[in-house]
Image 1 (cartoon, rainbow, N blue to C red):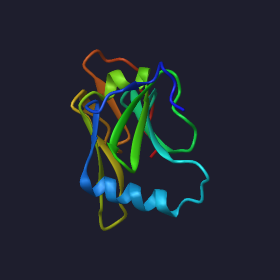
Image 2: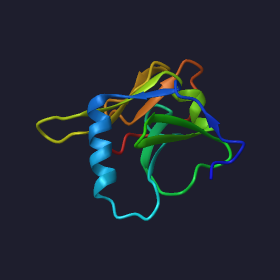
Image 3: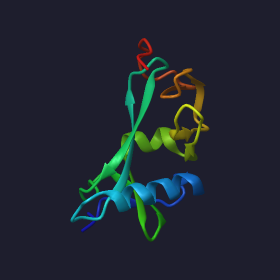
Length: 133
């Protein structure tokens, strides 16, 4: 059951068709008794000030989560702290010769690290650390 405090906001982030296909495949391959959602978050750190994280989550949304209903098969959970940095972002999947993976195209990032896992906003929030990727 979703808490009355959780907020449904279908426009905060979008998911590309390629990423959606990959996510549906991952969810289908997971043995879980509960419906899985995609938890996306931002944390302080990384070589540019903030870093992204995401993973499948079988727990119900938290009280401060923003919930994005991508389609009938996928919900994205974003905590309220992270939501302010992800407004307008797109979750995508990049398939490259040396491996692929999920990526976030974020219009709020004014600078990103070459590793692609960290970013900085215009207010320079977050503390930059050496790149470990």
